Image (tube, rainbow, N blue to C red):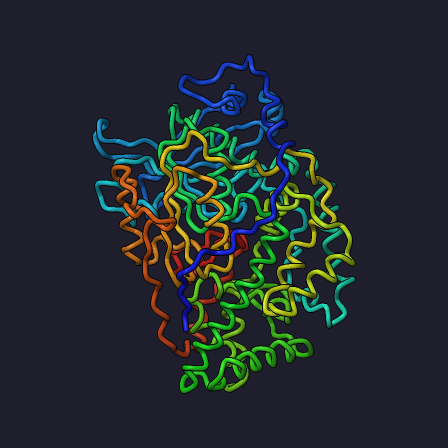
Length: 560
């Protein structure tokens, strides 16, 4: 069922013109005094006083990790005005406990998003390490600017995700409703946050990483980033190569593809993952009774969605109803983490075979229900919409996306409307955008990628490996997890540990330095939807809540 590859992936990507990015970043006066150490001209231009505040650590009062410390760090809104208006970044730290001589300094951690909280990461990732490695690092998490517990927390429309939202499928005549909804969202963001949104790009966040470094009082940091965190890390490495000690990028965003075209790659990969789910479910017909062929399973999926168009399901404890849009949101995360497949199949089986909507209600509240506001969606848009020039013509979107939908109907229109605020976003081209990544001056960088990851497709890892001369690429051939470390694959995790312990890199000399086997399919099981089980499973989580393996093996973090 799970295809493997022995191939050179198509390396054709859309190149982003980035001269403006370099010019904007290099506009810092050359006379500004950089920190000591060998630097590139670009690094010298940005390594000036950032005007950041101090990290005054105090206990996080976390009963599960008493040693965890928290602080708020002041950073400038606009790094071209380092002593101008300030905002605050929430940072936490699990301090090193090894003797000082054995300590290896701080490692900053980011799970992606863009905009997802990293505050859960120090305790969790340190807990996955052997005791000697865990004790040698200061494990640093943070909430990116404008998100989560950072100050301010940007909110544009607190009820944007409330159900029941318009149907994603353009065949249902809801395009005008979505265009109006997304145009209003972009306008609401601009009305309240025009002073901050243009300064929430990946470059701005990378500058925040260096403000954290400065506040920590160290000359170098290590970095682990997943998903969009790979764009953040590679951007930091481009700006500050001599400030990097070690860097690990997991599930990689290609460095040159536009966000619009990246989404099209996602659509096609998600289609393959959905078809893999249908094949898995068909083999378990004795459990789910949804048909013995993938086509039969997909037909039943479509039947549930069609019925929800006229009979939406109560979403409580989340607000509103579960209609076709909410149903699709509940299912697309199965492409990111196939441990969801038994629950997804249970939703379909419960609805069609047992006429029971409780599994759908539980899954929606577990995976897709909105939180108290629009979560990290403002940060997501501030990064993606601002960093590339997006198509502004709805007729272009309509024609182009219809061609994609013809081959990838599972996710295309869901993904299109999630990103359609970029059609109206007021800040395109106003900021530095995505830097070209060359890797010049970087120490060895370790890259991890699954070949079937739908969120950050394999071509992105190929492009990043080519862009970073010092990198080594580790591939999970046939694997499909998004962010592949810490899921119990010792081939992957041991490679990560060895690198953090003493800098050891995989010894392979080919384009792929090391290949690991894919994970095993989950065991089919019908998940009990009794009231007691539902109560234990259905607590809603916000889109920006820490969906992480620390508290949920079925977790999905962000869209990237």
